[in-house]
Image (cartoon, rainbow, N blue to C red; front, side, top):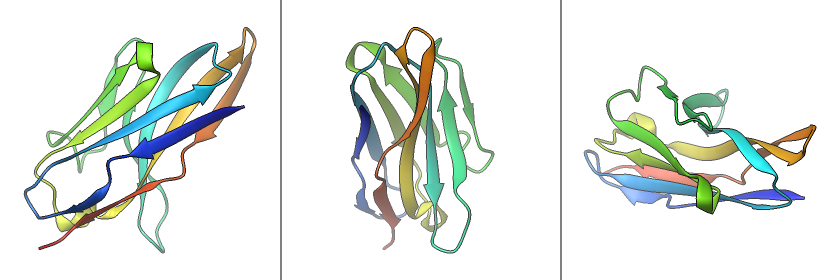
Length: 120
């Protein structure tokens, strides 16, 4: 019913920047919170950044000041601008959202993930 499609991952040198995008499509009444997670093989998925439908943002301590989450409600899209990237940021990044598909029905949806590799 609802899909999240991420893009923008790739290989970048330490100190570089990338911008991830995630667009929701399908049967959407409205979108509540949107989040970015990341996961390294063998480790738990980590919440990186959150943005509410009102634009309130929050970040994990290890990306605060370097990453910026934003959203374009008209395009059902959330972005993650990542600056001053470090090798420790290497991970698969996942988009997550709570989508209102009916006036009283909500779904939590995940994207397929996009790989970010920070290496020289």
